[in-house]
Length: 74
Image 1 (tube, rainbow, N blue to C red):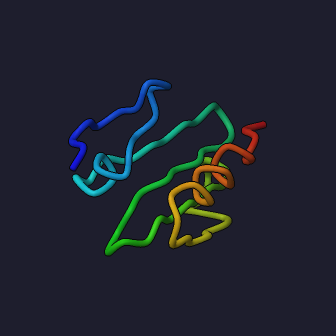
Image 2: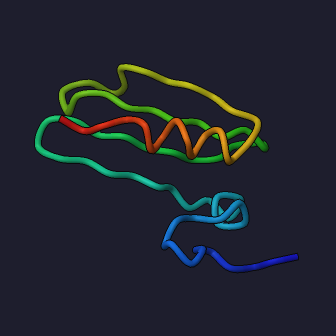
């Protein structure tokens, strides 16, 4: 089993998510976050004034990361 928290690109690995790490980016107006819980990857995003505006869940880290990367912060 690989036990690296981050991959070569500096992104969290499945092991890192399994350890409870969270990937999050934000700016003055919007934010986005990805985390894992019980083997499911959750991607949330929204404006700073809201807890979340959109919440998507994925069984696969590749698909979750693809969606996370597609979210552009305004």
